[in-house]
Amino acid sequence: MTTTRRMRIKIVGPCASGKSMLAARLGQMGYDARSAAQDHSYVPDMWQRLNPPDVLIYLDVTLSAAQERGRIGLGWDQRYLDEEHRRLSHARAHCDLYLETDGLGEDAVVREVVAFLQQLE
Image (cartoon, rainbow, N blue to C red):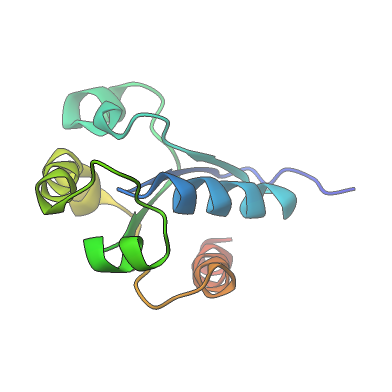
């Protein structure tokens, strides 16, 4: 049985499947980690005032990497990804960990994030 660690972790970024995977894996390790259901909720005024997380993690991906992994379905193009980055620019500027996931598998992403979190504990 795992115990929940105290820090609250929020995961944002343009790739929903990557955020969900990381939140699930961290949850299995006992972290209170959640992916942002709607990234636009991380505009400056809202996320700073409404229960901000202890740790904000930004997972980034390029369009080509996302397409190679099959994570982006129909309707995604560079304009959409650019809009996601624009909407998330404040979160990216204020995140505690920014991680480019291009070329990283799921296990590598989890290892990088856990190593960062262990430095904070």
